[in-house]
Length: 117
Image 1 (cartoon, one colour):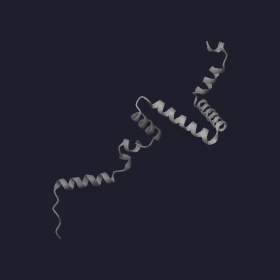
Image 2 (tube, rainbow, N blue to C red):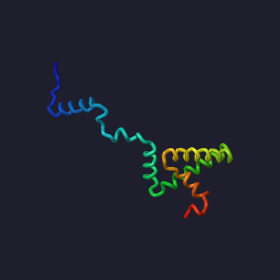
Image 3 (spheres, rainbow, N blue to C red):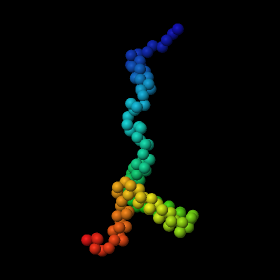
Image 4 (cartoon, rainbow, N blue to C red):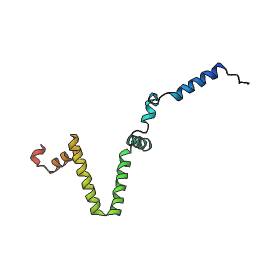
């Protein structure tokens, strides 16, 4: 049998390639595992890269688009009820998290003028 001649460099490359394939996935760099782990952060990064300085305008424009779609599809009162239910749900979640921003806002808004000073 005629075997092709192999040099030392080719053997070293073949050995390192074999070790790389056998290495467990836990030993992979952290960037590979977390690259797509957080889709919200990926979207925020894309918006920041695509619209620098206008991130909030883009997000609010998208929210306005969704509200307009809801108004056309389910009507004004159903959309208003949906927004109210979502706001109540977020307020309850904030209260449970210990950061009741919505509740505090409405307390300040509806409270007496003596309480504000």
